[in-house]
Image (cartoon, rainbow, N blue to C red; front, side, top):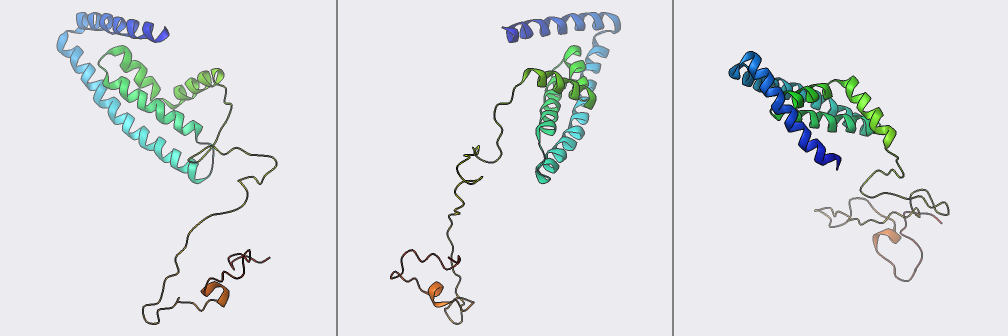
Length: 180
């Protein structure tokens, strides 16, 4: 229901502001201001967006919580959409969202209403089972290929016999890469 009121009230505010500003300074200066704020706002959004992207990459590289830079990136994107939308009210809100202090205040207000129940990183959320190792059962499954030397047709390193040729007579022996 709030979204309905937002979509109803924002255009009414924009129309009222266009009428008021257009009546004070005229049609062409009003349109010039709208176009100018879109151009300036887009340039500001690009520079701040690049800064936010660098901060996101740095937080991942340093294994820090990326919540703050991601939220700033989303708000910068929203600011850009608002600045490209014709109107004085949306331009004012978009320009405000480009101010880092305002974004922090918005994050704090939203943070008061959000409750995080689970957090995970990676392609899938990893759940810790207290009865198992922290990241699964400790087994890493993988495939490998032994590259052969073109001159000799053998592996480039002399491998021990148990690794060079598979021996089916010794089941459970392991791969040779581990010691029991």
